[in-house]
Structure formats: structure tokens, C-alpha cells
Amino acid sequence: MKIQFWGTRGSIPVPGKNTLKFGGNTPCVQVLSKNKELLILDGGTGIRELGDKILIDFPDGVEINILISHTHWDHIHGLLFFRPFYFDKYKINLFSNENNGMSVENILTAQMHPNFFPVSIDNFKAEVNYFPIAEKQNYFFEELQIKTINVHHSHGTLSFRVCEGDKNFVYMTDNELYYRPPEEYPALESIAKNNNDLIDFATGTDLLIHDSTFNVKDYPKRIGWGHSNNISAAMFAYLAKVKSLYLFHYDPIYKDEDIDALEKECLGKLRDLNADLFCKASYEGLALEI
Ligand SMILES: [Zn+2]
Ligand SMILES: [Zn+2]
Image (cartoon, rainbow, N blue to C red):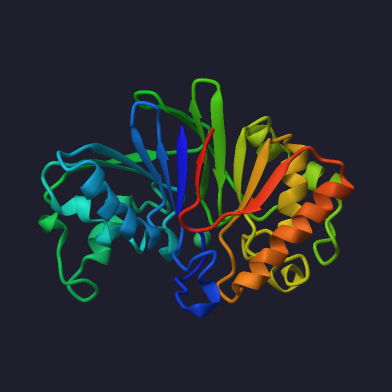
């Protein structure tokens, strides 16, 4: 299974000289199975460039499954610029939790109201199907299998465990790892105690993509915002015995050097824990195979 990052930033796109290394696009991760089954996690602005690549790689059309973790702007605001929607040779299946009674179809239709966007949903030429998904379910595609769980974020936000044979990874963006007291440096025992269902969900995975919006110093000013700091993410990965951790969903105010520091602090913490765990700050364009 191949995994590629097309957007790693949280909240709002931040292009410019301060974000050249890690990129400024909002969340979008592409998954390609061995037989080229195509899955996309989230429709942040990174999905625009991915759409253009799909037009080149699959000129005769392909079925595309898009899973939306939740419908906050930063996870959907690239969708309307995903060009396969506007070609009849593509089949696009959109999966999302019906959050507060609003399906992703309702949300897309609202986004395409003429006050907000010049093109209406009637201009989609692709076959577009909408599927509600929920937590603690299994969804089976041809080769890929998805498991879901609710995370600590706005109501109904989902994390996905993606499996192909004996390979699997977890995409857990927009998740606040709890510990007490949250004003202080995280304690391993408290992370274990307050996040045990999520630890079970991620246990033993080959690769974990986890929210690392803040550094441990800035986090106390952001308690309750639904996002984690880098050290609690590292501890969580250690407790879940994952093989590798990729930091994700960075605060838009962070420059490249701040994200380098997030990674460095995590590596230091993992060394202190004697953890046999690879850790890297994800960046736009990073492509992996598990
Ligand atoms: Zn987000
Ligand atoms: Zn969010």
C-alpha cells in the first residue's frame, strides 16, 4: 500500500516562504493499494493538485473513494477544486459521518450556493455517490478495509484504520489526546488512562498519522480546541506500539523551523522512553510504502 501526503497543515492554507519545506495545504492523504484501488482521506486544499495528478495517471477514468474525517472547512475546502468531479469518466464515492444531521451532499450543495461558488453541483459530470459512515464500523472496499472510531474533536469526527492484508495504518487527525493536568507536561500514565479506546484502535499499526498541531509549550493556551501537542502524540504512539509516527495538521502560525522543532522534541522524548519507533514530521509530497 502506498501513502502520499498532499496537505499536512491544519485550519487554513498557509502558502509562502515560511512553509516551503512542509507545505501550506490543508489535509489530504492519498492511499493506493497494490492493485491501484484509490482512496483519499480528507478534501483539504491538497486535494486540488492530487486531482490534477489523477487526470494524468488515470486518463480513462477510475473509481475514487474519498473519506472525510469531519466537515470542518480545512478538511473539505479543496473538494470543489478536485477536477475529476467535472469529467464523466470518473466515479467518486464520498463517505462522511452525517454530522448534526447534515450529510456531505448537503454540505457540498450549500458550499456551491451561488453566493459562495460560481459552479453548482449540477455541473458535476462524474458519477458521484454519497455514503453515510459511522464510528466503530468496518467498511470493505475491493482490497482495502476501513475501521472507524470517534476521536476527541467536534462531534462525530472519525479516525480511520486502513488495512490491506497484514499491512495497516491509522489516520487520526484533529484529535486532542487527554491528560491531567493538561496545563502541565504530559504524563505517560495519564495519556494511557485517558485515551485507552484510541490506543486500542491504533495498537500495533505499521504507521500512525497523528494530530500534532501544537508544541508542548503552546498547548496549555489551547486546551479544549480538539488538537494535540507533539509530546502527547509521541507518547500515544509509544503506548500503541506503532512502528512509525508521522506528525500532521500543524498550526498555521508555525514556520518550517517550528515544525523541525516539533519533530526534534518527539525524537528526544522517544529516545528517553527507549522506544523502537520511527518518527517524522510529514510534509507535502512525502510518499511512503508499507
Ligand atoms: Zn482540521
Ligand atoms: Zn477539525
